[in-house]
Image 1 (cartoon, helix red, strand yellow):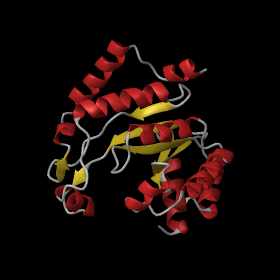
Image 2 (cartoon, rainbow, N blue to C red):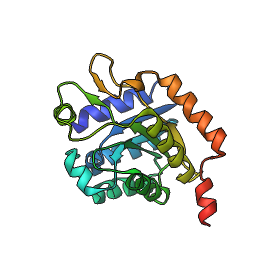
Image 3 (spheres, rainbow, N blue to C red):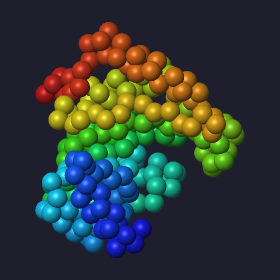
Length: 215
């Protein structure tokens, strides 16, 4: 989007009296200085909050190359610093179950984010959708998606390892039904959430409890 159009849309939205917050979802490599200047101006001119959601997905460069993320971890860190310097809260997206990543590698991403200076996190399971390269690799047997039991266990572990200062915005997700190949169990989002809550209660796990054990 041209900078001029971005500025017009943002200021038009911020100027509405019933708008209290603007939420922007984008990529770290899109956090350019000209866009940042517009966000800073809006914060000064209007009484609205601004949050930015950044897609990180993983800290591991080999996985990032496999999914063709298109930017390295340094790019993410630079974007996060710019936003933090402007006092704009950042919510980070993480995908659990990416090919080639085991539980420990996924937890390494969570531990990294504990000290990265983020406001919130979205935990999202990997979906395989029709008409994608990932679908071809899945059908060729090159990787498997997580079972519901494995995903619930992973999310519970992530919650236990996550700093209590970070707000959890999402614990799962559901892909478009007409495009979803796997995992089909993800369609029952309420059941997944109920299983997560049950497992947390049964195992006595709460956000950040593993950090206390390490301390």
